[in-house]
Length: 203
Image 1: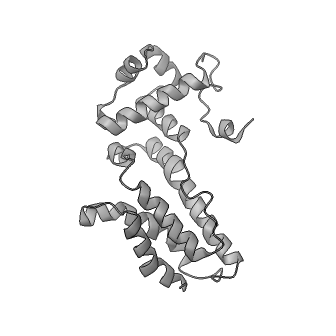
Image 2 (image 1 turned 45 degrees about the vertical axis):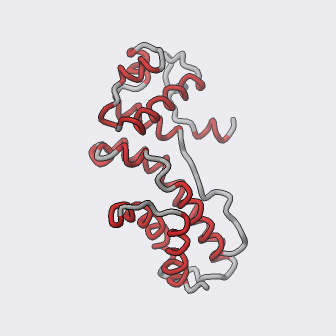
């Protein structure tokens, strides 16, 4: 089994009643996420997804009992790690590169905004969002920090290490709120150089 297959939500295989192929299942997931981005979470319905994917409403309800369960499964199918593969041999450069990658994507994926208050009101959605979009990125960022510690660039007990993910993701979320602009690559690199690197004692 490939790692991609292992990471898929257990929806098709978990139900003996299912006759949906993994490819067809992914069509449903792509459709619901596209409609969330376009219309927002509250506007989508199981009926609308069924119509757009040319399947029966009962097919969707047989697989996923509720809209939150369906959207949560779709989120989990789209796990992503933007920071994976960043390894320049220098912690400072790795963090600058992570800032560039995050900044280049900032504002392009409106899924978080489109989910809106629904995420705060539904624990399953909130958990799926963290699993799909947040935790993989934090794990990759912590791996970057771990390698820096192993190379001796920063002490393992440095008090600033645990706050780096919150700094990076916090500025991504809050700049649009505070300044009305997305944190682009240039802004994030300057943030890393002015705030994150000095906090870690790095040049």
